[in-house]
Length: 64
Image (cartoon, rainbow, N blue to C red; front, side):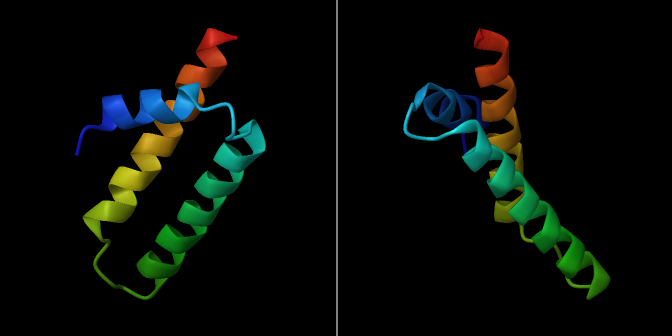
């Protein structure tokens, strides 16, 4: 999975608001917390998704 490429694509997408990024991160954080509390293994895709969204949000903020 190419985190840099996907995060750049998302950062450039004007149909995604800053709130959408924040909400997605909050949802992923809640899911990670639930998984951790249940002592379940954390799926790698959830980690990748969080990294992609977090990087996209940072890139968008840096461009402004």
